[in-house]
Length: 223
Image 1 (cartoon, rainbow, N blue to C red):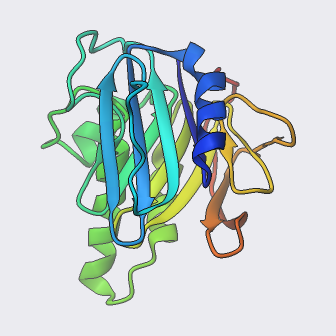
Image 2: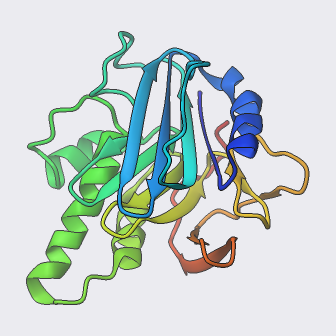
């Protein structure tokens, strides 16, 4: 099991972390979206009590992780979030067509964790767009990637070039509220995110906005 969560407010982030931490204490991470950059901190075990928030922070997301089936010794490279040139992702779930995706699209990716493929698929679709079009559509890259995934996933997806944050799910649980928060484990005022919906965080108006839909391929709910 894993969990993902995020908030504008450090106090709410702490509430969500406490609500979600029972889903995994093998590893944890904090990703702060700033005005100019995205800041990532990964930890073995729980988020340290001495953790300090980044001064430039606009929004903060987190991930807690149980050991994966393929990796049971902590390392930075096999812990969430996973990055490519333009993307940072956190994932809760299991990608069942991992081997097909590796062989067909990403034979050069050596990371053994299935989640790592998602960031690299996003990068692949962005680069494919750039070959034929000067105007890159990040939402189309997300939609194309999610349509390929089989199994279960709840995702927080950061466009590292723009600082835009997206959430989506298929099978795995995920919730959001009207104040810009999201969480695997819901709190007061949270709603379940429908499967097959891509939401973008409107930071100016502090709310989630639906920007696209995608075809889901999971016939069951995975928690």
